[in-house]
Amino acid sequence: MHLRLSLHLNLVQYLDINFVTKISVVMSRIEQLRSFIADDPTDIFLKYALALEYAANEMVEEAIVELRSLKELSSDYLPLYYQLGKLYEKSGNIQLAMDAYQAGIPIAQVQKNTRTLSELKSAFEQIQED
Image 1 (cartoon, rainbow, N blue to C red):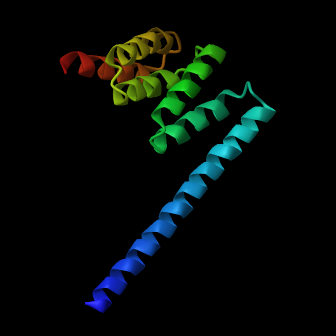
Image 2 (image 1 turned 135 degrees about the horizontal axis):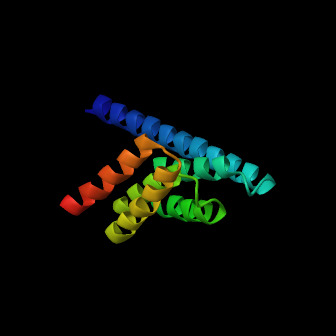
C-alpha cells in the first residue's frame, strides 16, 4: 500500500514539474514574440506567429485579438482569414467565422491562391452544412 502511494505521489510530482516546465516554455516563446513585435510593430509575420502560438496553447481570445490587429495592419495577409475563422468557430462565434472565411475568399482570388481559396470555401460550406 505504501509503495503504491509513493509511486502515485512521485507521478503527480513529475507531472506537475512537466506542466510547469511546459507553461514556462510557452510563456517564454510568447514573451519573446511580444518582445520582437515591440521592436517592430509592423512585422506581419511576427504578429501571425504570436497568434498561432496563442492558438496552439488554447489562448483563443488572445489569438483572435492578435489576428484582428493583424487584419487592421495588413488586410491582404491571406493566411489570417482561415485561422481567424477557425478560432471564431472554436469560440462559438459561427457568424464571425463565416464572415472571416467570406472576407478571405476574394483576397485569395485576387492573389490567385487556389489552395487557400479552396480551404476558405470548404470551411465556409462546412459551417453552412452544420
